[in-house]
Length: 625
Image (cartoon, rainbow, N blue to C red; front, side, top):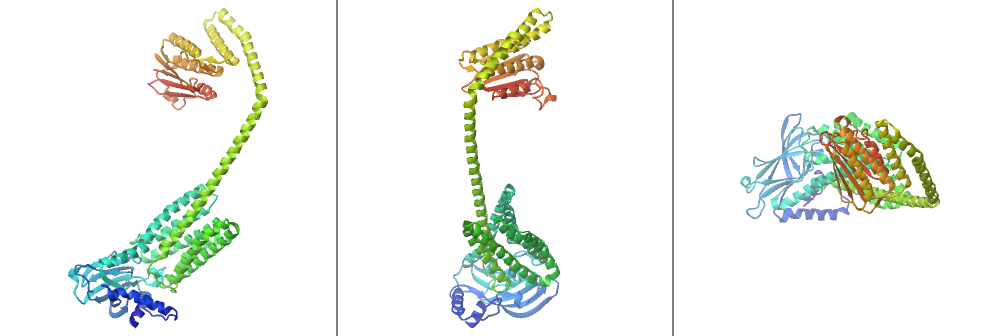
């Protein structure tokens, strides 16, 4: 029992005295842990013999050195990089026939190769630099029944790893855990549980924070005046990048380059965390910005100066600095949140305190104050906490967006109310007088045009001997009469307007030898068009007919008139050559089309032109009734 307690309750195989209050709990824990080995079909191998070791740059060396498992190289062979070969013997446990035995290795860092009675049964990746990094992965391998003997079975394990001095974290230092041999069905749940919490959970949460980080960068782009979103998005992506070591076990770089890369990345991640807490709290200190920038430069400089022999020591110091910086930033943020944003304090304090606790535990592990944990909480708990903070940021963004939308809605509502009130007041004060003045002015202008200009044009029509001048005068007289009709402001029946337009259109196109197909189902429509709509529609129709006669080269023209409950629709289509290619994209510049569209727009309608070389031109006029 004494030897059992020494092996189970010591760290790295070295027993340590414990204060009296811990001994009863420790003994109870050891007894419970020993029950499967004593009562079940489980064999725990806690003793092995190191039969050889070979450094990456040195010769192989044979030996016969008994070791206790777990074997931490930082204790048993400090400063060693390379391969260590272990021999462990075991007898078959008593179990039902037909059960498949399996070997379970909780930790073999960085990689392991296993042979049973001289036959290879386990190899995952390379044992030569760059070595496959399996430190966080448990190993479970079935033991073929044909290779097993009732007693004296030999397990040969070749473990390749690196000295503690040459890695940035104690979890990646070389070593081998104890070995468990039991029915595979019993070990499978233990293996899956260990793999899930140490690897799979970290991978899933890592992917989640990548998505959240990209989303935060999108929010940062949308709200560039709030840099907290930018720093938090970079923090999430940086942490996810550091967690990529759980995905990529076969790194193309050697151990030194990989460890330096990981260690260098921690500095900007911590800087983003500190700056995020400051910006989210509504504060900004130039000295802190400069300090974070200098730290990102000092970390690789200190690694280069210390060299690989003191790499772990340097990174342990930096880890402590990181924890102190983040703890200070959290305390500074919570103090101001307590004074300025009390509800925010209660929401964020629990999450941030847990962040400090996890970081402190990790620091204690690196300083060898705490043993290496079986479950690396920081792999998945820290991203989960980041995710909780991210959800709070999203909630804060949504609340701010809702508040802005509500404020904008109330502002627009008040503006609409005031505008309507002003318009009503203006209409009440000016409508009567303006209408009277406008009506009187329209009648005066119409009378002047009819009595003065009309008489003169009519005289020219009857007295001019030049046919061209007479024609122009007649056209001007018609335009003047049309304008006078619009100025009088008298509505026109739809049926009368259609009759006027049809008569004029058929006459003009007939004189130009263009066949006309006029289609309408509203010859007896009793609704009215305003004088202005009648005048503008007449001018648009005249301009369209003039374009057909002068420019299209058409032989036939179709005019369709459709009037529904709200709109007056007129479609004019010819079979001419269409608008030339040189005017492509410039339909508003020629043939009077710009004036047609402008007139339609003045009536709150639209005039669309569709044309192409070889298939004629279609003009669609839509006006509200």
